[in-house]
Length: 349
Image 1 (cartoon, helix red, strand yellow):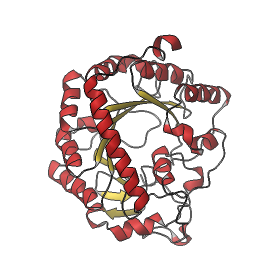
Image 2 (cartoon, rainbow, N blue to C red):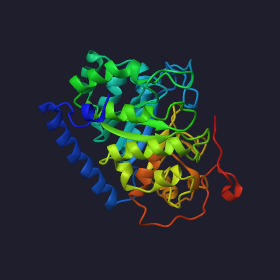
Image 3 (cartoon, rainbow, N blue to C red):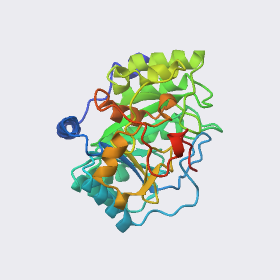
């Protein structure tokens, strides 16, 4: 598939999607304005209703093959708690969230709190009927990561398997769809990322590219071919937010970043047990039950320096923290449960 066949002639966007997109952008602008005015609330929370996944990608440490879904009543309470904290964006992840039997009700509850509703999925369980149900539930954003063109022993999230599901999304989805390709972390054919990005843009989706982190979410610089592909994809996706920050550029070059990580404050990761963590790769800090998490906790973590931040590759935390990069220098104060002296944070399995 050539660039001219995909990038220059994308599918026309249906009117319903344009209308919903305009309304969604207005809500997003309002949430950013609110974040600029006040630092006392989370901007984004990532919440796990289902740790089990139907796939087993070799680089992933965020799933298992046996967990039961979090009961609906408990999920609704957790969504309400995020609403109580004033969370602007709530993203459902996993595991594989589409395995949760009451996912639509969870999405609807997110929207009821006034938050923007997002989801990260491998896309395997999508069909036209399921997409229509997600429309009705009020989903705002979906991200699918596609790792290769053909499935291999590292990842089954391939364009070959998912392409028909992408076509269904292009035809039926009223929500925004982003396709994320990746390089690094054992991906065998870096050129696949370029092919995937072209296909996404040709279907009218947005496209981003990420660098797969190591098991602790830490820096893993790109090799020569990986860097060439990464640059080429970034030229294709000029409107991507990642083009306007320096984090991924430094990571690709094997350099650390000097930034103020606002995890635990602006960004919350809520695991299947209902505990608040810094992110998916630093589970165990502060590990406070969401039901007990308060605005005081948000404000404390907003000002708490994280020792893992220089080599971090977790782009969603980068982007959320960037809102406040210009203000509120952080202290070395530790969070409850962190090692004495706030030594190196470690991943909690």
